[in-house]
Amino acid sequence: YHVWISEIMLQQTRAAVVRGYYLRFLDGLPSVRDLAEVDDDALMKLWQGLGYYSRAHNLHRAAQVIATEHQGIFPKDFDSIRALPGVGDYTAGAIASFAFDLPYPAVDGNVLRVISRLLASELPIDTLSGKRLCTQAVEELLATQLPPSKLGQALIELGALVCTPQSPQCSACPASSWCRVAELPLARLLPIKGKKLTLRDRYFSYIYTTSRQQVLLEKRGRTDIWRGLYQFPLFESDSPQTPEAVARWLEHELSYSGELRLAPTTFSLEHRLSHQILHITIYTAELESDTLGSSKYQWVRESELGDYALPTPLVRFLEQLH
Ligand code: SF4
Image 1: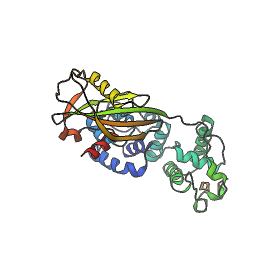
Image 2: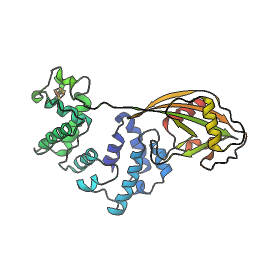
Image 3: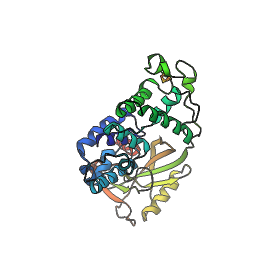
């Protein structure tokens, strides 16, 4: 259970950031059964700020699968682990080898880099053939007498601490005697990546809408980033919007009978995710009446906002506001 939680949290997130979340998570949900039974909002609160929220939803679903199909005991064979929601080849290999010492490769970005350098491979690591070459090399190492848990973790640590992307420490590397690029300039040029990442721009205009010490919130849907988190009314577009356009949108969105004015904003930021850049602006609007024509939103007391899991940019806005 602990290895699983840590591996899921470490996807896309640095260990230094994960540490506090990991300890808090295990404190709140010490077993698979606790995770299976937790309610969605409490889970989101534990995950708030860690990002990539679909990971938390998948953990929840996987815990429910373990509770119903495996009698609440984490499965010990690779195929059952791999079949859990949110578990891909790397994570299944990591859990099988680190937790159960089974001979399955755990090939993450660190391992792809280390193996590409050890073999002087110029195959792009984001292609099937590049990945296959690295995975086969790890499988050959696993066929030796090395314990799988030690081998897998050693390769990952080697990549994280010694064979780093920009400055490989070849003179201090325990593998330098058989590395084909040790001390060569080629080391820094490897691994090769084929595809260029295309980033999508999204423009988020939030309106922090208040009335009688209450704030308007909605729960985000289940098909996009920040699934299941709460947010202020959001006008999303493909290009920047004027405050007037945002105000008109909100009037219409809330079926508000009266003219709505936004206070000038000072809060805007760029929030980068792996495949998108969010251009976020947060306006404020105070309504005279809290009677709305729309039931999509709920009023929440300002003093109780802390009970709701919000995306990090909104938390930053609230910190600046108070
Ligand atoms: Fe990486 Fe250098 Fe070690 Fe080779 S010798 S694995 S390039 S740190």
